[in-house]
Length: 433
Image 1 (cartoon, helix red, strand yellow):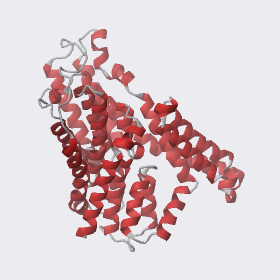
Image 2 (cartoon, one colour; image 1 turned 135 degrees about the horizontal axis):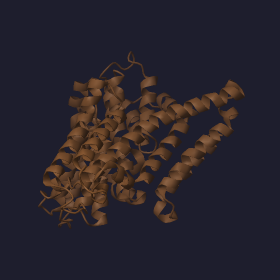
Image 3 (cartoon, helix red, strand yellow; image 1 turned 90 degrees about the vertical axis):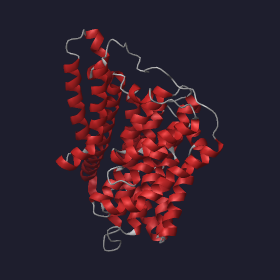
Image 4 (spheres, rainbow, N blue to C red; image 1 turned 180 degrees about the horizontal axis):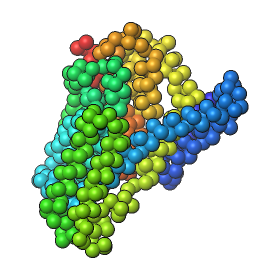
């Protein structure tokens, strides 16, 4: 039965990769893959958990499914909240504050500009939210689909690299920090240079061959009437939205609320603010400026795509396939660099969260003390290795959903650049430690 689960996962993965060939939306195949995995687990429960008995098997699987669904829901609600806030800023023309100040049409300068902002913003925000914001900016600023896709692919690399060196930039780094495997100061000082090499290396390589200018989508790019929103309203919503997103990690550290609750708190405050701002306007004039109207524009298939992928990975985790894989790697690989490099590459296929959780469970602190090279390598590799494939990270999945980037296109044009950057960071740690 284990082989059936693996076959379903691989077939689903291939269907997602070949979306533009088979003409089936990736959200449909991802959701089908996730639900089929859990159907097989329940139908063949006796093969997976013979020691529990019929009643025990059902209760255990239902309980585990609900636990995983709770964790997945945190990500989905965070994604939904962040996408809604970004759409709210966009509806008020807020991103024109940034795009109107971009005067250069040089492809190289624009690429460095976007990747630089993404790298540092993802460290103080998080790579998922940063990817959503930058994807929206790309759609507002660029015209050509190939340019948007290429810039989006480079943003995936920059977002994951930026999140890896910050204790709050990536969920896996947060896990290592909260569990006491790393300290905030050490992870910043140790992983910053490898992370910046991870994005600088592909940027330099691309800059050597990239030439020409790029077609910009000039204008406010909002698609709204200038009379609908005043300049004061535009500035207020922009700074409250962006400032609020940047405050999410601060609110989390002060209140200990989970990130999805912080983003929902921010969403509710902005909802109240915009309702008050537009309270005197006609219903038709304010319909596209308040949350109740904007939320209908959210890309629901992208959210369901996330759900399907995470459900499928959770199924493999429940029956122990991921744990067995981690144990096999532990028993057959005793080199820290090789082990962590493979964990990072594996995270481009399956979610890096269960991989890191498995490592935390398997390697106690007396074996690898706090701030040991193993944990530093794991933070870097698990954070940046997912860039090798577009569905290997939350940032990649967000970019794929928002910009409709083709899986095969990414594998051909971006994956080798991501691997080049990934390797440069590992080499740096190997040489300097």
